[in-house]
Image 1 (tube, rainbow, N blue to C red):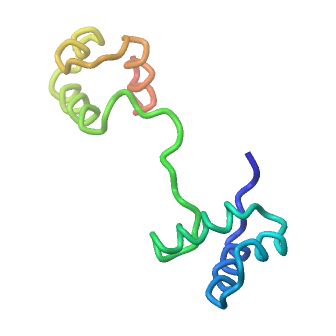
Image 2 (image 1 turned 90 degrees about the horizontal axis):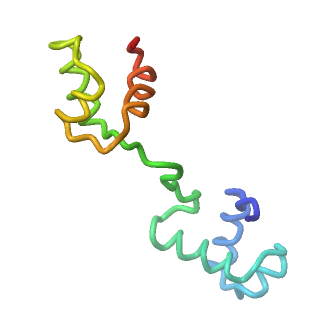
Length: 110
């Protein structure tokens, strides 16, 4: 995948489109694809900005923030609870090792 176009180039594309320039000419002038010109135009129309789209990339956490809060509350009340008991109590769909890593990342010692 190619590097995204910088904001300055995106603004130039919109400026030239607003002046009435042909997308094919803009693409040749900037040495980019015509599809990129249309994509940037679409982003500008949809968002009002030429900034890059922020995407939620990466793996989604298996334990939601709500579940994390419930686990923290339970640990305050019952510090002797086992990983297996937590998984069963909160109906978590993860393995004990994953819960262990999650708790360690929160600063708990096991």
